[in-house]
Amino acid sequence: MKNLGYIYRATKLKDMDSAALVFAILHEIDTDRVDRTQLGNAMELATAAHLSQKRIGRAAYPVDAYIVHPLRNVLRLIRLGCTDTDVLAATALHDTVEDQPREIVSILDRSRLSDESNQQAALDLITEHFNTETSRLVAAVTNPLSDAVRPKTEKNAAYAEHVADVIKDPKVFLVKFADFVDNAGSVQYLDDEAKRAKLAAKYAPMVEVFIAALNANRSLLGLDQSGLDDIDARLKALSTSMMILGH
Image (cartoon, rainbow, N blue to C red; front, side, top):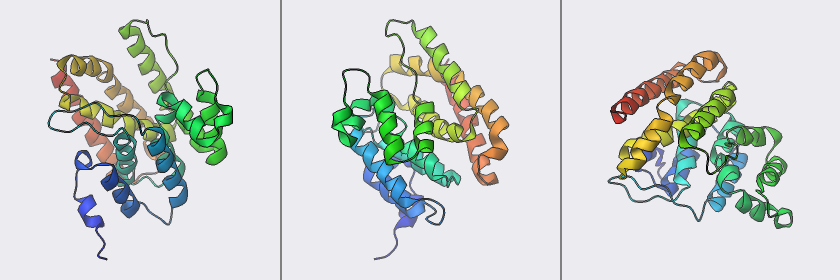
C-alpha cells in the first residue's frame, strides 16, 4: 500500500486522535537510531494504564482519551528531532507513575500491589521492564506528593520549584518541555473560565523558567538548529498567550 506518512506530517497534533498519533509516530521515528520495540512497549503500557482516564474537554473539541496527551508529546519530540529512545519512552510513560501507579503495578506484577501509593513499585517495574534511565526520567517528571489542603499558591510555588530543579538535566528538560507545552498550550481552549484562569496562573511563571533552562541546555539536547528554533518559537508563543489569558 502507498505510504501514508505524508498525511500525518501535514496534520496538526491537536487534530489527531490516538490511532492517528500512533501511526504518525511509527512513520516519523528514525528507526536507525530509535529502538522501535522499546518505544512501542512504552506506548502500549501507557495506553493500558491510562485506559480509564479522559482528557479535560476543550472548546470545539470532543473530550479525548487521556492517552492522546502523552502520545502527542512523543510525536512533538520526534518532530523536534529527538532520537533518544529513553527520552521518548519516558515521555510516553511520564504521567503513569504520578497518576496511575496502581494500574502500572497491576499490569506488570499484581503481587507487588499494596495499600500505599504504589509509586515506588511502579518505578521499580519500569526499571525492570525497560531500563534504569527510562525509569529515572519518569521519576524526575513525577510531581512529589503534596498535602491536599495546602493553599493553591503554595502548591504552584512547589510545582515551579520542582520543575526548575529537574529540567536542569537536558533529557528531563525534553520530557518536561513536551508535557508543559501540551498542558499550557491547551489552556486557551478550555470551556471552563475559572479553570482557564487557575491554570494560567500556574503555568505563566513557568515560561521564563523553561527559557532559562533551554539557554543553559541548548548544546546538550541533541537537537539540530531547526529543533532548537522550534522550541524557542513555541516558548515565545506560550509567553504571549499566557499574558493574554492573565488579563
